[in-house]
Length: 337
Ligand code: PEP
Ligand code: MN
Image (cartoon, rainbow, N blue to C red; front, side):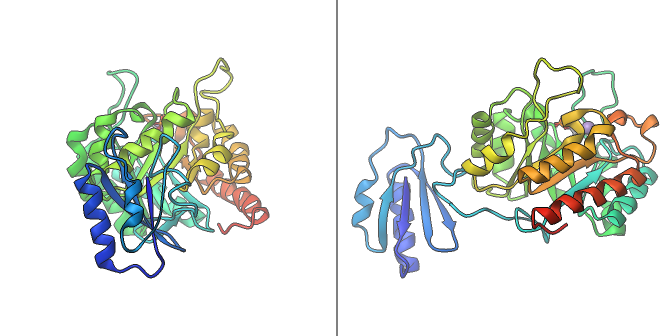
Protein backbone atom coordinates (compact mmCIF):
# COMPACT_ATOMS: atom_id res chain seq x y z
CA UNK A 1 0.00 0.00 0.00
CA UNK A 2 1.07 3.58 -0.62
CA UNK A 3 0.14 6.07 2.07
CA UNK A 4 0.22 9.51 0.48
CA UNK A 5 0.84 12.25 3.04
CA UNK A 6 -0.89 15.63 2.71
CA UNK A 7 1.34 18.46 1.52
CA UNK A 8 1.32 20.27 4.89
CA UNK A 9 1.64 17.19 7.12
CA UNK A 10 3.69 17.42 10.31
CA UNK A 11 6.61 15.21 11.37
CA UNK A 12 4.51 13.95 14.27
CA UNK A 13 1.74 12.87 11.87
CA UNK A 14 4.29 11.07 9.70
CA UNK A 15 5.77 9.31 12.76
CA UNK A 16 2.33 8.27 13.87
CA UNK A 17 1.53 6.81 10.42
CA UNK A 18 4.83 4.89 10.43
CA UNK A 19 4.15 3.61 13.95
CA UNK A 20 0.68 2.39 13.01
CA UNK A 21 2.04 0.61 9.92
CA UNK A 22 4.59 -1.18 12.11
CA UNK A 23 1.98 -2.09 14.72
CA UNK A 24 -0.14 -3.70 12.02
CA UNK A 25 2.79 -5.91 11.03
CA UNK A 26 4.08 -4.09 7.92
CA UNK A 27 7.38 -2.35 7.29
CA UNK A 28 7.18 1.40 6.54
CA UNK A 29 9.43 2.84 3.84
CA UNK A 30 9.46 6.63 3.56
CA UNK A 31 9.93 7.93 0.02
CA UNK A 32 10.63 11.64 -0.34
CA UNK A 33 9.51 12.62 -3.85
CA UNK A 34 9.73 16.00 -5.52
CA UNK A 35 6.00 16.65 -5.07
CA UNK A 36 5.06 14.68 -1.99
CA UNK A 37 6.07 12.32 0.78
CA UNK A 38 4.67 8.80 0.59
CA UNK A 39 5.05 5.89 2.94
CA UNK A 40 5.20 2.43 1.43
CA UNK A 41 3.71 -0.19 3.74
CA UNK A 42 5.24 -3.49 2.68
CA UNK A 43 4.66 -6.96 4.03
CA UNK A 44 2.60 -10.12 3.67
CA UNK A 45 -0.68 -9.19 2.09
CA UNK A 46 -2.71 -11.40 4.41
CA UNK A 47 -2.19 -8.93 7.30
CA UNK A 48 -4.77 -6.39 8.54
CA UNK A 49 -5.97 -4.16 5.68
CA UNK A 50 -4.48 -0.66 5.74
CA UNK A 51 -7.29 1.25 4.05
CA UNK A 52 -8.37 2.69 7.44
CA UNK A 53 -5.13 4.72 7.58
CA UNK A 54 -6.95 7.15 5.30
CA UNK A 55 -8.69 8.43 8.46
CA UNK A 56 -5.43 9.41 10.17
CA UNK A 57 -4.52 13.10 10.39
CA UNK A 58 -2.05 14.20 7.70
CA UNK A 59 -2.94 11.35 5.34
CA UNK A 60 -4.31 12.28 1.92
CA UNK A 61 -4.90 8.85 0.36
CA UNK A 62 -4.17 5.15 0.67
CA UNK A 63 -3.55 3.46 -2.67
CA UNK A 64 -2.85 -0.23 -3.30
CA UNK A 65 0.32 -1.18 -5.23
CA UNK A 66 -0.79 -3.63 -7.88
CA UNK A 67 2.63 -4.86 -9.06
CA UNK A 68 4.52 -7.63 -7.18
CA UNK A 69 7.43 -5.22 -6.69
CA UNK A 70 6.56 -2.41 -4.33
CA UNK A 71 9.56 -0.15 -3.69
CA UNK A 72 11.21 -0.59 -7.09
CA UNK A 73 8.19 0.45 -9.18
CA UNK A 74 7.00 3.74 -10.58
CA UNK A 75 3.73 3.44 -8.64
CA UNK A 76 5.40 4.46 -5.39
CA UNK A 77 7.88 6.88 -7.01
CA UNK A 78 7.01 8.22 -10.46
CA UNK A 79 10.12 10.38 -10.84
CA UNK A 80 13.54 8.83 -11.65
CA UNK A 81 15.92 8.09 -8.79
CA UNK A 82 19.45 9.42 -8.81
CA UNK A 83 21.98 7.22 -7.04
CA UNK A 84 24.86 9.17 -5.54
CA UNK A 85 28.16 7.27 -5.53
CA UNK A 86 30.17 9.61 -3.32
CA UNK A 87 29.44 12.57 -5.60
CA UNK A 88 29.05 10.71 -8.91
CA UNK A 89 25.35 10.83 -9.68
CA UNK A 90 23.85 7.97 -11.72
CA UNK A 91 20.40 8.46 -13.24
CA UNK A 92 20.50 12.21 -13.89
CA UNK A 93 21.24 14.12 -17.08
CA UNK A 94 24.79 12.80 -17.25
CA UNK A 95 25.73 9.42 -18.73
CA UNK A 96 28.14 7.81 -16.24
CA UNK A 97 30.83 5.47 -17.55
CA UNK A 98 32.37 2.84 -15.27
CA UNK A 99 35.55 1.32 -16.74
CA UNK A 100 38.46 -0.88 -15.79
CA UNK A 101 39.76 -4.42 -15.99
CA UNK A 102 37.71 -7.52 -15.37
CA UNK A 103 40.14 -8.49 -12.58
CA UNK A 104 42.61 -6.50 -10.53
CA UNK A 105 45.92 -8.20 -11.36
CA UNK A 106 48.65 -5.96 -9.94
CA UNK A 107 49.14 -2.43 -8.58
CA UNK A 108 50.73 -1.32 -11.85
CA UNK A 109 47.95 -2.79 -13.99
CA UNK A 110 45.13 -1.12 -12.04
CA UNK A 111 46.97 2.20 -11.75
CA UNK A 112 47.81 2.33 -15.44
CA UNK A 113 44.20 1.50 -16.36
CA UNK A 114 42.80 3.99 -13.84
CA UNK A 115 44.93 6.86 -15.19
CA UNK A 116 43.92 6.04 -18.75
CA UNK A 117 40.16 5.67 -18.19
CA UNK A 118 40.04 8.81 -16.10
CA UNK A 119 41.81 10.78 -18.84
CA UNK A 120 39.19 9.53 -21.31
CA UNK A 121 36.26 10.54 -19.08
CA UNK A 122 35.28 7.52 -16.96
CA UNK A 123 34.00 8.44 -13.47
CA UNK A 124 34.17 5.10 -11.67
CA UNK A 125 36.92 2.47 -11.77
CA UNK A 126 35.88 -1.19 -11.89
CA UNK A 127 38.07 -4.17 -11.01
CA UNK A 128 37.23 -7.59 -9.63
CA UNK A 129 39.06 -8.67 -6.47
CA UNK A 130 36.78 -11.67 -5.81
CA UNK A 131 36.00 -13.38 -9.13
CA UNK A 132 33.08 -15.73 -9.79
CA UNK A 133 34.76 -18.07 -12.27
CA UNK A 134 33.15 -20.98 -14.09
CA UNK A 135 36.19 -23.15 -13.36
CA UNK A 136 37.53 -23.58 -9.82
CA UNK A 137 41.01 -23.75 -11.39
CA UNK A 138 40.72 -20.31 -13.02
CA UNK A 139 42.12 -17.14 -11.37
CA UNK A 140 39.87 -16.35 -8.39
CA UNK A 141 41.05 -12.78 -7.77
CA UNK A 142 43.62 -11.09 -5.50
CA UNK A 143 40.97 -10.62 -2.80
CA UNK A 144 41.98 -8.18 -0.03
CA UNK A 145 45.21 -7.31 -1.87
CA UNK A 146 43.09 -6.39 -4.88
CA UNK A 147 40.95 -4.11 -2.69
CA UNK A 148 44.09 -2.36 -1.47
CA UNK A 149 45.31 -1.83 -5.04
CA UNK A 150 41.92 -0.37 -5.98
CA UNK A 151 42.04 1.93 -2.95
CA UNK A 152 45.45 3.20 -4.03
CA UNK A 153 44.16 3.84 -7.56
CA UNK A 154 41.27 5.85 -6.11
CA UNK A 155 43.66 7.84 -3.97
CA UNK A 156 45.84 8.66 -6.94
CA UNK A 157 43.18 9.37 -9.57
CA UNK A 158 40.14 10.49 -7.57
CA UNK A 159 37.99 7.93 -9.39
CA UNK A 160 35.31 6.19 -7.31
CA UNK A 161 35.74 2.41 -7.12
CA UNK A 162 33.42 -0.56 -7.57
CA UNK A 163 34.09 -4.25 -7.04
CA UNK A 164 32.04 -7.43 -7.07
CA UNK A 165 30.96 -9.34 -3.98
CA UNK A 166 30.60 -13.10 -4.37
CA UNK A 167 30.22 -14.18 -0.76
CA UNK A 168 28.30 -12.42 2.00
CA UNK A 169 31.11 -13.15 4.50
CA UNK A 170 33.23 -10.58 2.63
CA UNK A 171 30.62 -7.81 2.88
CA UNK A 172 32.11 -5.83 5.80
CA UNK A 173 35.62 -6.05 4.34
CA UNK A 174 34.52 -4.89 0.87
CA UNK A 175 32.40 -2.05 2.31
CA UNK A 176 35.50 -0.71 4.09
CA UNK A 177 37.22 -0.16 0.76
CA UNK A 178 34.80 0.58 -2.07
CA UNK A 179 32.24 3.25 -3.04
CA UNK A 180 29.85 0.85 -4.77
CA UNK A 181 29.28 -2.91 -4.63
CA UNK A 182 28.56 -5.02 -7.70
CA UNK A 183 26.31 -8.06 -7.48
CA UNK A 184 27.13 -10.12 -10.54
CA UNK A 185 24.87 -12.01 -12.93
CA UNK A 186 25.56 -15.30 -11.15
CA UNK A 187 24.32 -13.90 -7.83
CA UNK A 188 21.33 -11.95 -9.12
CA UNK A 189 19.02 -14.37 -7.33
CA UNK A 190 21.21 -15.15 -4.33
CA UNK A 191 18.49 -13.95 -1.98
CA UNK A 192 20.56 -14.25 1.15
CA UNK A 193 23.30 -12.05 -0.36
CA UNK A 194 20.71 -9.56 -1.65
CA UNK A 195 19.19 -9.23 1.83
CA UNK A 196 22.59 -8.78 3.49
CA UNK A 197 23.61 -6.07 1.01
CA UNK A 198 20.17 -4.52 1.57
CA UNK A 199 21.03 -4.08 5.24
CA UNK A 200 23.95 -1.79 4.35
CA UNK A 201 23.57 1.67 2.83
CA UNK A 202 26.29 1.30 0.18
CA UNK A 203 25.26 1.94 -3.47
CA UNK A 204 24.72 -1.35 -5.32
CA UNK A 205 25.12 -2.21 -8.99
CA UNK A 206 22.82 -5.19 -9.54
CA UNK A 207 23.51 -7.10 -12.74
CA UNK A 208 20.78 -9.07 -14.45
CA UNK A 209 21.19 -12.84 -14.28
CA UNK A 210 21.87 -14.52 -17.61
CA UNK A 211 18.58 -16.43 -17.31
CA UNK A 212 16.57 -13.90 -15.31
CA UNK A 213 13.41 -12.33 -16.70
CA UNK A 214 12.92 -8.60 -16.29
CA UNK A 215 10.27 -9.30 -13.66
CA UNK A 216 12.61 -11.57 -11.69
CA UNK A 217 15.34 -8.93 -12.04
CA UNK A 218 13.04 -6.31 -10.52
CA UNK A 219 12.15 -8.68 -7.67
CA UNK A 220 15.89 -9.13 -7.01
CA UNK A 221 16.21 -5.34 -6.68
CA UNK A 222 13.13 -5.40 -4.41
CA UNK A 223 14.99 -7.82 -2.08
CA UNK A 224 17.72 -5.19 -1.59
CA UNK A 225 15.30 -2.28 -1.20
CA UNK A 226 13.00 -4.21 1.15
CA UNK A 227 15.85 -4.13 3.69
CA UNK A 228 16.09 -0.33 3.48
CA UNK A 229 18.93 0.16 1.00
CA UNK A 230 17.41 2.24 -1.82
CA UNK A 231 20.76 2.91 -3.55
CA UNK A 232 20.32 0.44 -6.40
CA UNK A 233 21.41 0.75 -10.04
CA UNK A 234 20.30 -1.95 -12.50
CA UNK A 235 22.60 -3.34 -15.19
CA UNK A 236 21.63 -5.21 -18.35
CA UNK A 237 24.59 -7.44 -19.23
CA UNK A 238 23.24 -9.93 -21.75
CA UNK A 239 21.12 -13.03 -21.45
CA UNK A 240 21.64 -16.58 -22.69
CA UNK A 241 19.86 -17.42 -25.91
CA UNK A 242 20.39 -19.93 -28.75
CA UNK A 243 22.68 -17.40 -30.45
CA UNK A 244 26.34 -18.39 -30.20
CA UNK A 245 28.07 -15.77 -32.37
CA UNK A 246 28.40 -13.61 -29.28
CA UNK A 247 29.05 -14.60 -25.65
CA UNK A 248 25.55 -13.47 -24.57
CA UNK A 249 22.67 -11.67 -26.27
CA UNK A 250 22.58 -8.08 -25.05
CA UNK A 251 18.88 -7.50 -24.39
CA UNK A 252 18.53 -3.80 -25.13
CA UNK A 253 14.75 -4.21 -24.96
CA UNK A 254 15.33 -4.34 -21.22
CA UNK A 255 16.35 -0.66 -21.17
CA UNK A 256 13.00 0.90 -22.20
CA UNK A 257 11.03 -1.84 -20.41
CA UNK A 258 12.89 -1.25 -17.13
CA UNK A 259 12.65 2.51 -17.56
CA UNK A 260 8.88 2.18 -17.80
CA UNK A 261 8.53 -0.10 -14.79
CA UNK A 262 11.08 1.30 -12.35
CA UNK A 263 12.43 4.63 -11.15
CA UNK A 264 15.91 3.10 -10.64
CA UNK A 265 18.74 4.03 -13.03
CA UNK A 266 19.60 1.49 -15.73
CA UNK A 267 23.07 0.99 -17.17
CA UNK A 268 24.37 -1.45 -19.79
CA UNK A 269 27.44 -3.70 -19.99
CA UNK A 270 28.37 -4.13 -23.67
CA UNK A 271 31.58 -6.01 -22.73
CA UNK A 272 29.94 -9.06 -21.15
CA UNK A 273 26.89 -8.58 -23.37
CA UNK A 274 28.93 -9.31 -26.50
CA UNK A 275 32.13 -10.99 -25.26
CA UNK A 276 34.10 -9.39 -28.10
CA UNK A 277 35.88 -6.02 -27.93
CA UNK A 278 34.94 -5.31 -31.56
CA UNK A 279 31.24 -5.14 -30.71
CA UNK A 280 31.58 -3.07 -27.55
CA UNK A 281 31.47 0.33 -29.26
CA UNK A 282 28.42 -0.32 -31.50
CA UNK A 283 26.44 -1.83 -28.62
CA UNK A 284 27.51 0.99 -26.29
CA UNK A 285 26.17 3.47 -28.84
CA UNK A 286 22.93 1.50 -29.08
CA UNK A 287 22.57 1.37 -25.29
CA UNK A 288 22.78 5.16 -24.94
CA UNK A 289 20.36 5.57 -27.83
CA UNK A 290 17.95 3.17 -26.06
CA UNK A 291 17.99 5.42 -22.97
CA UNK A 292 20.62 3.89 -20.68
CA UNK A 293 21.92 6.10 -17.85
CA UNK A 294 25.44 4.74 -18.12
CA UNK A 295 27.78 2.00 -19.26
CA UNK A 296 30.20 -0.41 -17.60
CA UNK A 297 33.08 -1.39 -19.85
CA UNK A 298 36.14 -3.61 -19.48
CA UNK A 299 39.50 -1.98 -20.25
CA UNK A 300 42.90 -3.65 -19.94
CA UNK A 301 46.38 -2.33 -20.84
CA UNK A 302 47.28 -5.68 -22.38
CA UNK A 303 44.16 -7.74 -23.16
CA UNK A 304 46.19 -10.62 -24.63
CA UNK A 305 47.67 -11.28 -21.21
CA UNK A 306 44.59 -10.52 -19.09
CA UNK A 307 43.82 -13.07 -16.36
CA UNK A 308 40.12 -12.90 -17.29
CA UNK A 309 37.91 -11.55 -20.09
CA UNK A 310 40.79 -10.34 -22.32
CA UNK A 311 38.87 -10.95 -25.58
CA UNK A 312 36.17 -8.45 -24.59
CA UNK A 313 38.51 -5.82 -23.11
CA UNK A 314 39.37 -2.57 -24.86
CA UNK A 315 42.93 -1.25 -24.81
CA UNK A 316 43.17 2.25 -23.31
CA UNK A 317 43.63 3.87 -26.75
CA UNK A 318 40.54 2.07 -28.05
CA UNK A 319 38.62 3.10 -24.95
CA UNK A 320 39.42 6.72 -25.73
CA UNK A 321 37.89 6.34 -29.19
CA UNK A 322 34.96 4.50 -27.60
CA UNK A 323 34.32 7.52 -25.34
CA UNK A 324 34.37 9.88 -28.32
CA UNK A 325 31.76 7.71 -30.02
CA UNK A 326 29.61 7.62 -26.88
CA UNK A 327 29.74 11.41 -26.66
CA UNK A 328 28.29 11.70 -30.16
CA UNK A 329 25.25 9.65 -29.22
CA UNK A 330 24.92 11.33 -25.81
CA UNK A 331 24.72 14.68 -27.58
CA UNK A 332 21.89 13.45 -29.82
CA UNK A 333 20.08 12.16 -26.73
CA UNK A 334 20.63 15.53 -25.02
CA UNK A 335 22.63 13.92 -22.24
CA UNK A 336 25.94 15.11 -20.85
CA UNK A 337 29.02 12.91 -21.05
C1 PEP B 1 32.24 -8.87 -14.37
O1 PEP B 1 31.73 -7.74 -14.32
O2 PEP B 1 33.44 -9.10 -14.56
C2 PEP B 1 31.30 -10.03 -14.33
C3 PEP B 1 31.68 -11.21 -13.83
O3 PEP B 1 30.10 -9.72 -14.82
P1 PEP B 1 28.76 -10.62 -14.91
O4 PEP B 1 28.35 -10.87 -13.50
O5 PEP B 1 27.81 -9.72 -15.67
O6 PEP B 1 29.11 -11.87 -15.67
MN1 MN C 1 34.53 -9.74 -16.66
